[in-house]
Length: 173
Image 1 (cartoon, rainbow, N blue to C red):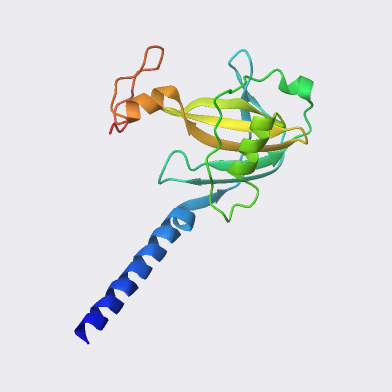
Image 2: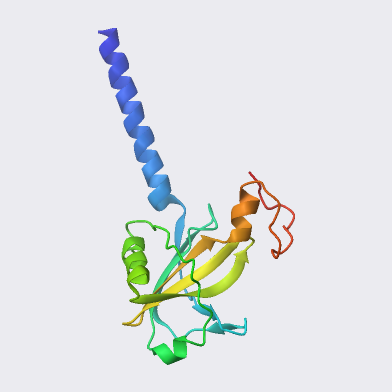
């Protein structure tokens, strides 16, 4: 009898812990952003506001890479050619409830050439770039991605050549 009680207690503890972890990862820290603007870096390195409609954006203060946004734009391919490309774009998965953002779909569109990635803003936080992708239909997505400087510094290595100095307080593993 005591063994059954222990097994049930362990199972209940596992279910509560698993549910709590799921909730914390999917919902707890996210907040919906209002009044969000879509920024893009042009070929000269200047930041410009991208004409965008229907912007939906979320962010969480628990991690610098939890930012996600979706939008539409009516810019044509010629206008988009004035923006800095971001060839190493890798969309990060967002929470399932943020329906307009699907990293698998965005990644496939990038790989198949149906979408192009651009630098929104370099080092929005040290080691983190804001990246945007726009497909041929004018749908766009934005996410934060660790850049090469961040990869090295966050792994506990010195910043590579060409990277800005590491600010005081940036966590190193």
